[in-house]
Image (cartoon, rainbow, N blue to C red; front, side, top):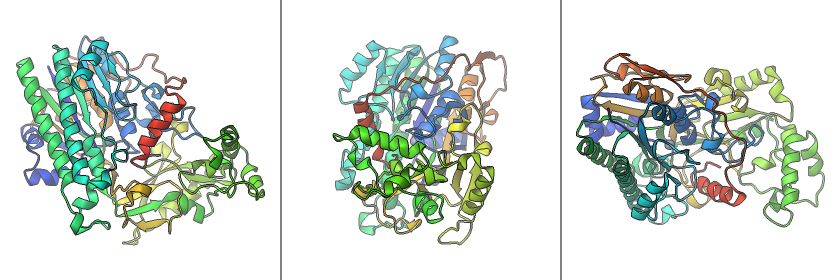
Length: 541
Ligand SMILES: [Zn+2]
């Protein structure tokens, strides 16, 4: 059995389904026609590091503990999250224990690399160039691709200046990653699983939706274009080439899973959750702060200031009375929240709302009920219907890292609503997304949706199945089942509907076994600064 798990990062179920209708994604169409095609539900929050962490471990976020690229400083010990701060066992360990070799190529959140029985090229969310193991693979792959990167980072490449040229680089990157996969097959002549993620489709979704969607509030007919579809087509083509390469190399038909980690929707409205919380008396920003001193000679004072603002109840108000101190800057001002007087705040993307730790709100269940009710009454700016399903953490997450999870998550009923948690001088809590403004607001016109794709075909896959409720967390158990392995200790069971021959003879393998997350920092301060800057490209920080 040879399995290819091919990731078209951020490929959206609705968009892909309509493109299949137009005949624009022939590889996906063939897989869907010969096997199964279904929506694949992402994690909540539907963000790249969280979803791929569930893909790798089979655990829900309460189990693996990755809710974003960075940890909420009030809940985590790490600033930057990484594979080292994740709990749970990536399923390559179980494959390795069963004597099966695998290659993981630019799968997000695989840095720092772990020695696998096979090859690993670390993916998005880690440093550039990616880390490659083992050494022989590193030499071969970097000799062929000395400029290898996990993704084409849009702000660094000033995408708005020449979008055609940026699109060409996204497409070229797809080809480069496909070539790294071919090298991995060459280096590992007896590979059982090749797993790859193409990040270009995620970036194209964020940046090109206003050009594709004529209904988009920022759509300009003079700037219209189908770049997003062209990047999907490039990934579709690369997948076809990889399937051919595997067939040729192994002399057998591979089993193919073509999947995405989340969907992608156009942003028609933005809901500035911290602005809403401030307006409704739940959140207070500081008026004086030492944060403008960050990075300068008084950096140490700024750090102490941040710690006190996060932990001491009266500190924020005390400082506000000292007119000689600087006023906070309006951007990225998590550190300028007066936590002592804040009962709830948004952090990161995906509608995550945390209850105030220092203010005591976290320990008050009646307050949680009240806030949930208030948020559930927020209206859609166009239809007047309730805008959000307000979910509590116990409905969404389970496991040892529940305390790290947001107490509430806002899931927009209309996925064209984007919930964001930064602080800027926004006009109102709800804004129509009319201006893209790349240099200030990243310029993204699309954001993550909950529903990705799963197309599967080949040996072991059922014909014509289209299950409704498949989830990304189920993929490790599903892939292990294809190899006759029963994965224990995970949250996601195999997706039985798409599997052809029931359980058959399976061997049990345990996912558990001393897999705790490390507390040692993985990045130096300088490395962290570089990665954070890159994540800001997409408004993640
Ligand atoms: Zn993604």
